[in-house]
Image (cartoon, rainbow, N blue to C red; front, top):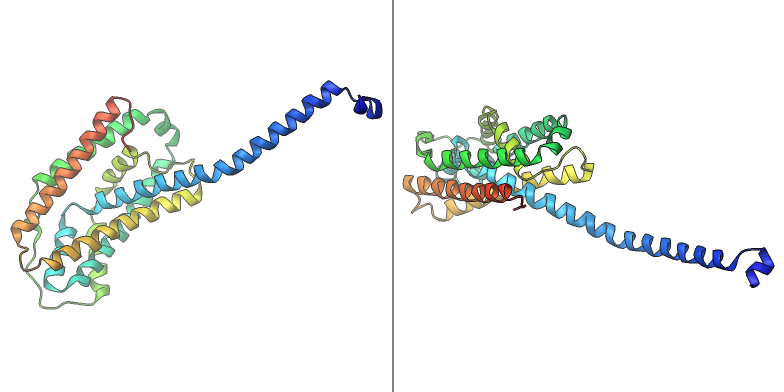
Length: 253
């Protein structure tokens, strides 16, 4: 009555307006509280996916993996690790190239995410089987008496990995399987994702060189073969789980 008499405002209208403004205020506060939590959750999701991708790409003992182990045994742990760093730099170049290429077909990816995840799981399964059945010992080279510089070991590993462009197909499968950062991702999220791939790769090379260095007296050709079979088995199991969950319409990762 006071508002109506003083300003000519209907009391019922004023009450509704107050409720509306109160609702807007509470909603804005709620969004301000939960928005950072959602962003943190997204960043954590990208971090662990990128980390896993980095490990999967680096783990199989191809020519570079065997070269890393061989240098660790013959030259020392840090020579082996530098070899891994060179391989990681080449891998991230191919990862960036894959992400850039997939950004042009982002709409297609969104519309066919089921089939792409199915393709990614099958490709990962084939990669795991190939890794399991391959014999990395064949990639061994006669040991050289010259250690060379760290830079030389880094560059040679980078070039050996770069000479294998087929790794792009592995990245396509992994990006599709894990629904990795797409065209709609923020720049900060994209950078975080690719940094996580590097972190995963470096963690693998650091761990494998540490392990080989610790058991160097017991580590032989059979050890390389067994390690490769274990890695292949893990990749096969993960891909089968991903394939099963995809067919059931569920999300494993």
